[in-house]
Length: 325
Ligand SMILES: [Zn+2]
Picture 1 (spheres, rainbow, N blue to C red):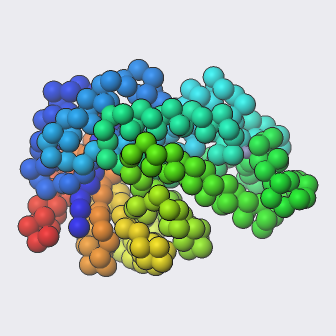
Picture 2: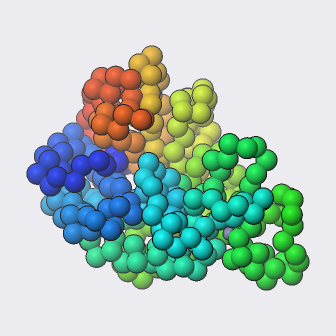
């Protein structure tokens, strides 16, 4: 059993060192550092230093393609979608949206340059974080993607015209497109000697998770059942998502990882969050991770209500279970 936490918002190396030392002392085993487009463009050597500091403190260092191309999860903007606007997804009323399409070759080239940099840093893992088609539509009923790359691929795969309306086949095509992209990404990373973990958003179909688990260069299959965010009864939500993930991973002998919501947590839910951390522990997940450091105290848009108190409880939980490992 390993414990991890995400870390972001600070690029001042002295403070990174202090924080990494503290995390190691508490009993964490790995740290997921966000490595956004902004970091890649302006902080590349600094990020490589952060990876080195993390490993020097005895922790595994992971890198997260945070918000890259708007295709991965994360509170980070994409400049690629402006600089290379042809990479963008096209919605069902033929309008461009601010997110790259996984079927676009240029987007894949950009991801390859990021993977190369991630590998050069000496990081242990890439954490492929919530890959998804664009879904932040204010108008309901719209969907993505019908860009030129998707239309071409659809024609090749099914030898039929791209439909105007959303259908079961489109839903399947989109899942296949994400799998194909992840296959490319994990194969590329493996060639660069960096290991792969993929985090799939909760409530995914088990057949989709199983296909992700089947990717030959995937080592860890993760999910992030942030039940409080989605207004779900947390205990059951975490239990069901953990079991489903484990069934998919087991078929291909992959490890599992469950994330804990430590952002946007109201005060009255603190105990519930901690109790929910026991579930993947009891069910035998291979690792449990927390999003994020200090219960996201320093990212005001998603900070927990009383982050110091919640983080203190998480520290206690990790220390207690670290002893029992
Ligand atoms: Zn597309």
